[in-house]
Image 1 (cartoon, one colour):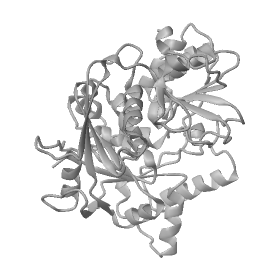
Image 2 (tube, one colour; image 1 turned 120 degrees about the vertical axis):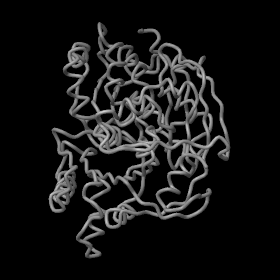
Image 3 (spheres, one colour; image 1 turned 180 degrees about the vertical axis):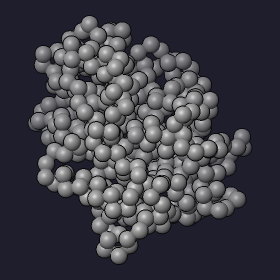
Image 4 (cartoon, one colour; image 1 turned 60 degrees about the horizontal axis):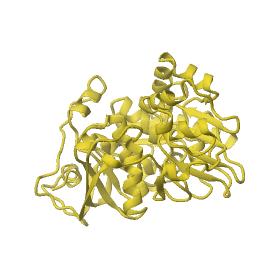
Amino acid sequence: MTITEKILAAHSGRETVRPGEIVEADIDIFMGHDVTTPPAISMLEEQGIDTVFDRERIVLVPDHFVPNKDIKSAELAKRLREFAHKHAIPHYFEVGRNGVCHAILPEKGFVLPGTTIVCPDSHTCTHGAFGAFSTGIGSTDAAAVLATGKLWFKVPESMLFVVSGTLPEGVYSKDIILSIIADIGVDGALYRAMEFSGPAISALSMEARMTVTNMAIEAGGKSGIIAADEKTDDYLRGRARKAYTPVASDEDAVYVSEHMYDVSALEPLVAVPHLPSNGRPARELAGVRIDQVVIGSCTNGRIEDLRIAADLLEGNVVAPTVRALVIPASTEVWTDAMKEGLFEIFTDAGAAVSLPTCGPCLGGHMGILAKGERCVATTNRNFVGRMGHPESEVYLASPATAAASAIAGSIADPRDYL
């Protein structure tokens, strides 16, 4: 079996499972945020369900519209807060010690190899970087999990992506996943588990691996997953909340398809509007005027990402025609960046540093685009109207490419600023 099949089999009390079968699996961790969990709470109340399956295995993180941008968002956050207090849920991360939920979960040691994780948010596939089966669900399924701790799944087919070679200077994990999505398309992995392996994946840090699995959903994937290794163990040392048992695919595991890539000649890429699959070399887009740069989100808002951006911005100045926004993904990242002096680098360059929030990524707040404006962002989606006006444009890129573009005032190749 593949790693995904093994995890689902173990959590549904079965020796084996095969793609297409329906299983009811135990859920190790449920995570919820301020947008999609309040509807689930309402459903529980409507059904007269006044208990949760296990308050220790529920993690609640207000992140999408925080700090609250208006009355409606304040009411959503209040709903989440009151639910956490009512059920004495200990793992509730209030503003001031919060962050983007997909940054909080691994930081705080909730993500472990071989486990099952669900959240009513599509980018829950991020946590597959640790060898976990982690996927987004809807609010109705979220209500079911909160009540029972179980959820049904159709076992997904698995696709294997073997990535070899050494990344050239100025090229990062964001470029790897953008190139893969450009190759297979936004529906190329529809309801499939995208399993990533190979020397180039092994060479990535855990933070960089999370960028890869984070965007599996942008290829239509049910999940993204990378087998745990020594780097996984190193990251979890001192973080993991309990012992874990890593799972790996069998040598004779069956995949619906296998894809081989060599990144040795890969260039910095930019996904042009309005699909994440529209990846093009940054150098081919040089000179495309921009109005805003966003460095952050669950895709590229970790400390490694901020360091990459700071390396390019140090000693340079953001173009006077550009608003550059830096949004650390969590309070921990915010604190580390401040202590390392990255804030001084950002502000000296003319960039603004925000509190942790999803903010502009979903067109929520803290960086909405007006009609006709363009933004280079380290986020994960560039759909029509994703970051504001339906006639605005979002270009997806790595932190390095985003920082270089902020300096140039137009899309730029980061290798020109290294």
